Length: 287
Ligand code: SAM
Image (cartoon, rainbow, N blue to C red; front, top):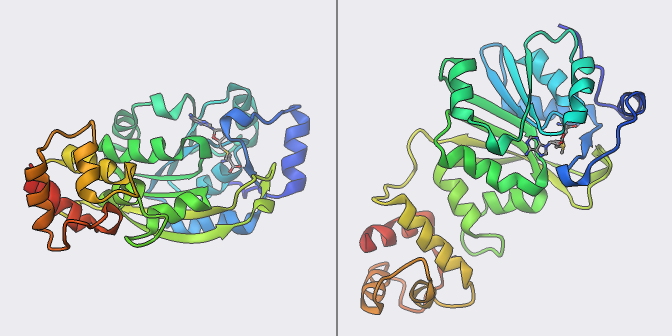
């Protein structure tokens, strides 16, 4: 297998100039130009020759080259068709890579895992386009796609929101949704100068290890997530008022107060103080 040639500013600029490539802001294009960061991502994802990796948004193929050296097989899904001839060039000689020109949000990843990996779990590794981080990650979880782990570069603030627990300002519906499906672990913080062009925000690499079974037992997942959304939509209100005012829920005041009372934290508690276990308890009571 060829050793990676991309991942530094000089070679990235050379490829961009060769193809007269212009960055498209609407696709969240910030390409990695730091080999240390690339090595760190590959190490954190713990990829081996037995793994089939799904890379979302390969760009000019920088991380794809690193992934191809470590994994058995790499499927790279890129929306921007102007990048496809570039990828065919930069990935020439990396025979275990398949490039798909498609919007990842429209792709049936379950079917892809079936075709490409015999239905066994894929590992997702990516420097994600930040404008669709949440739909990509929640899509992978909620559609029950066979995915073992997700190791991705995201906006630093989003990585923090995925990892925190109650009692912090970053805690919210995203924290609970991610922590219901996976165990999060921030691997590294990455400054803007590791990308071309430089993003306006800080970034972080986060690894999410998917649970085989969620850590809490919930009778009705959809109801629990409606309750969670209702609790955080009106952060300044008490949990009881948040649930009463939600257009997504139709419980009576008495039903809500009785369920909240059983949490044993008083009727003035706010939703942002509840753990995942407590949201599961509440939704099972209201179910
Ligand atoms: N992996 C490359 C790197 O690290 O240098 C590029 C990462 S860049 C942050 C995000 C990439 O995702 C871009 O190549 C962009 O064109 C692609 N992208 C954006 N939206 C996408 C979508 N909906 N489906 C697939 N790829 C997408």
